[in-house]
Length: 479
Image (cartoon, rainbow, N blue to C red):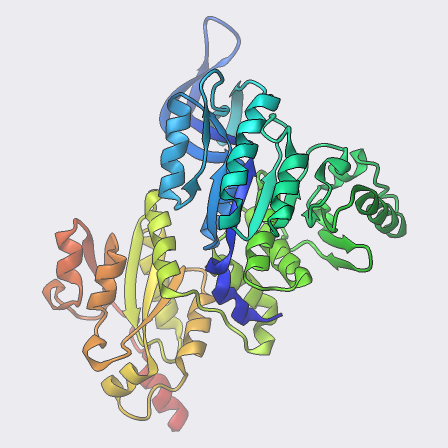
């Protein structure tokens, strides 16, 4: 696998077409039963709106740095307006078409004590006339994209999917489909379809043993005129099956918290990796890893390049390979975290030889918020600050070790030139909620403190662990 291609994630230009919806969550506590009926009374204290359905697929692509637009149907209502705002926050190009006579599909869930009490669905089935509106818009915009991804939730938006696929293929686009219909011939011409095991069986697939599974999958894609099938198999992992090849991938998660939206993560990751230039088997391998990360989280989760890189590094580290996301992408991910209400903590240092003092210090810093950003001096910066014999470990290795710590979310190098040996400029770009510095400092002496305080943040000074320092470690080694 060529990990260098991970730097091309933003090369993927994807149009997601399908059933969009708004997922609404009403969180609260329930301590009594209603006197009106034998149901719990939930006192709502928090509301949460999220992109759902095909919009969640687009969100997964955006979180992986892909360039993505979303084409779907919404109503002339508050739910549609809310969904539009979410798309703008997620840097998703909205191509949504308004249908005046029908509502935006919305699913409202009441959550109490981490359990779903009830779900309320607001939806009407879209018909052929509504789907025709999407087909006409697709014909106008398809040339602007490299990939067209159809996300079918059986709500009627893709009633004319056969014609839509023809439009995309006639324009020379790679087509991927997350199918719902057991009639796979509806997806004729698609390059990839991604059914789960149950959908595979409903379409006529035989999963009684590996030989039968492979043979029936090949028969299905041959009869339907589809290029390849990525079959998601729950605890059995995934299989990429074409007319001539079959690649199996073991499940990459030890403990499943929630499988909601896992299929969205799979097809989104597959598309972005293909767009980055990866071979299909390598793209599926990363989609499999991403799915393992997603199902370990609650709700319809997304996966960042940093999370994917960290998980990938667990079994590629013996090859000495490491991926550092581009700086602009990291800043975007930090902004996403802020939009989700997460508190950003920043600290910096050389971290030349990581020791117990560093580990404790970073854990304490992370505990002050939700996400920890570590500014890391470059090799040239360390040499200027500490002398020509330093650093002991080069930047890439120091970044790899820091990234492996559970407390560290992002590592950003700074100090390429002498005037940037302090992290002041980087702190202005990150604009953290909390700036943390270790040692005996006054707040006014800390680089970047003035910016953080001016923007309503706080600055904290932590004590180092006595006897722990890189200099002491080097001295002991030399003696």
